[in-house]
Length: 133
Image (tube, rainbow, N blue to C red; front, top):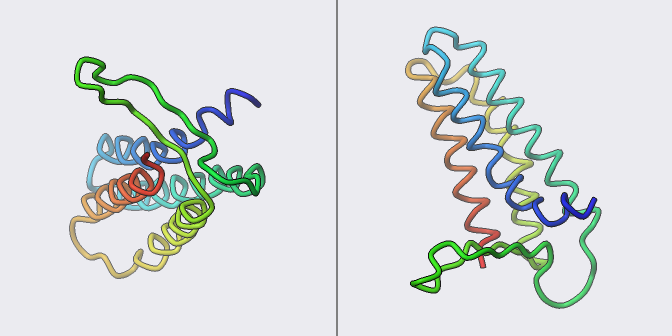
């Protein structure tokens, strides 16, 4: 449980990126596979983000903080953490992304692979922005 609490933010942020890489490896003709993978990835990200809600404590300051030196010579760290406001932004984002994928399924005519790939990259970027310190 300790490992999960330390790495939960990285897991939530980078799960959509893993899904995007998997979609990138599929041929563009496999539209049903691509759609299913996009739905599964966004749903899994939402389920994992619920861990944040159930283990968030009502105290001041950042929680689930994870910080490691990235470029120590320049003083740059990979640092993530959430407060009460960013918690709900993350959960709302992970809730809305599966809905966006499901409701856009019939609307995308061409280049579905690119659409779902960019949608998952967008989710990664949004979650990263909400959890960055």
